[in-house]
View 1: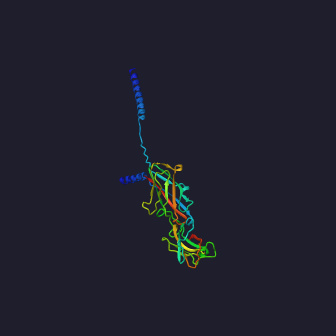
View 2: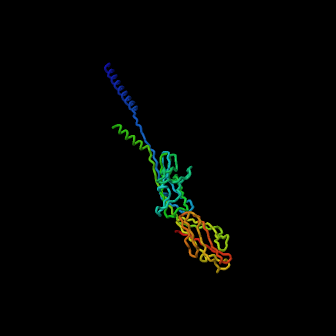
View 3: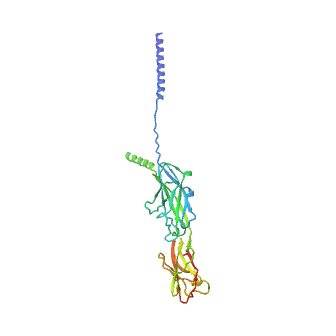
Amino acid sequence: MEAKDRRSTNWRSIIIFFAAAVILSGWAAAQVSESTRVYANLPTQIEISIPSQYKDLQMAGCEPDKHVSVTGAVEVKSNTDWGLTVAGSTSDGHMLGSTGSPVHALHSPMTVQAQNSAGGPVSIPGTDSSPSATALLSSIGPGDFSGTGAISLTFDQLFSWNDYADENYQITVTLAAAPA
Amino acid sequence: MKILIMMAVLSVAIALNTAQSASDSTHISAAYPGKLELVLPEGKELHMQDVSPGKEAKAECVVIVRANVDWALKVDGEYEGKMQKTTNKKLRLKNRMKVRYTGTTLSPAETILSSRAENYCYGSPGEVLVPTEFKQAFTWTDAPASYQINIYFRLSPD
């Protein structure tokens, strides 16, 4: 009888031990943890684009003693403060004709003004100018200035009597956006 | 080796963090046609002063030329360049009138007026004042009377 009681006690101890082990193992599994840290490096980025309809602009109604304007636009997307510069393709930034030897150049520089810009119009510099690019906008905050938010530009040119008549005066204006 | 790799990683990181400027361009063209304008004095009537036989009398005016091409100015007059008596169309002065440029910016020019357009002045594009003197010699054989003549300036691309 005594031996039977002892065996019963041993079995109970074993069961308790295993139960404790199972509980402890479950408890221990609930406490297991690990972590990972995720980094992201968002680079500063600026994109600029001139909408296709403004890539080739034609000034109309040119005649002596008259200012002629044409409207353009530029789209800029930037995630940092940015500024915009303009530069002309001719040596002094003046429109060049297609005839004459050397070809005729207009006497007055072309000016450009950005929509809602606090500053006035700026003269477009040429490749021989120093500096060869002039600031048009500066310290503009990050944003998406495309689509309906595109920045309107007005190019203005004075034609004078002492400018030679020419069927094809032209200039290419480069707009560059850079971090402010 | 580890330092080199770190430097490479660092340079890549800097490149990613530094935005390059971006640019685009627009082409602008304009057709500027030729144009000429000629402006004569208001009223268009000139009166010679101090007219007397054996002397030259003169009248002056300023012709304004506006052109965006090289230009030539010609002049011609009625009655073969001779002033005609106002009330008698058959009576004319003996001598033809002279037209002279008195400014300094153009080449000196003087022409004797005739019924054919004569070359007078040339110039480059711009707004140019052409001060002009009309000189008329009166002889003792010219009859005392009131005389007149119409003078025409003709501006054209040169």
